[in-house]
Image (cartoon, rainbow, N blue to C red; front, side):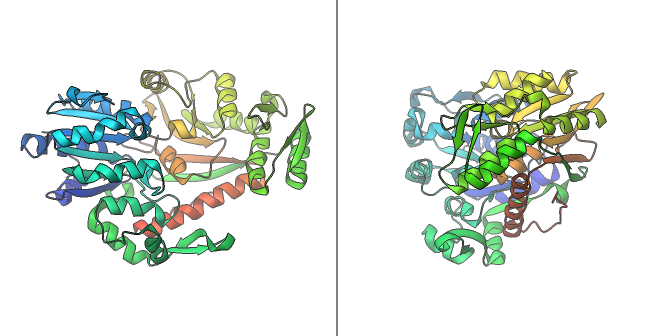
Length: 449
């Protein structure tokens, strides 16, 4: 059987005998191998028949490669359209979206025949108790013989992220999400409907620790530290004009095309786009403010590349920025909508080739990728050309090159030239503070301000 690292062995021992348990191990600590190891043991002991894995679409290829890498001989099925395809020893892979699509209709049928060891990878994906995804899971989760929730950070927005997960783990929480909110969430904002903080964090942490094993890389590895900084740029006069008009009037004309927003809250995404040299119009088309080669933010990125010894990951939030960066640097790129084999080839090209730059769209490249480069050209620098308000996207993307095998401190650089960009980074820091408080992760990390 596979030899586990100490953190994996400790988690495995804590879960032994428990039908429901959470492996809340920070990214890079080996949750995938841990789950495969546990399933193999239960299968050999005759306690389960199959393994069901629910994960983000980008992680399906990662699970397949991990099974192959560690020499497991499981029969791998991806979203089978009939329960007749499933046999004892099968590992069935579903992306979360497929739960509410046609493949999801077979799950209950499969569970009536086979005893399942089920894994919910990146379990924060089931956090929304109002979503159709969770409502369907609720209907058949009682049929699971074993359930394991895998996450490096199961709360990324507020304590409410935990309610569905703790419910599945049968934690000591209310059956009502609203009673849970009243106990653990500090409310504020418009009509007192926004979660702005945490109440009773010690009590919530205790509940989490009763049903899950929580581990951080700082506690269990000698991985190099994370370093944070920012680099500023100054917008051109064209950008400043567009920014000021949108901020003040919520409408601006670019290339004789009016671009406007109806609500003040929506203008902030437009203002962020200005810094990247474009804006989306009302039809969703990207309208350039200027030639991309002249965008000041790009110039600062080029300076960073010249100063950096090694490979560099560049993340962007918006698709037009991803495409413009990919075209400019002619580099390996991962964007939304790519197939498993395409993603695998891009990773191989970046890690083992001579390209200095990898460009990733945050939503598509945040999960499951190992981007460490090679010994002659390692990767220990990540630049955020753009951020989103998603803490999940930020913490997941940071760990693409901060994982086992990294020999250098990893530097994270935020490009900032507007008040909106600084506002986004501050919002991410606030969410991170709440998440760490709830999960009992009290070590201090110095972030960019």
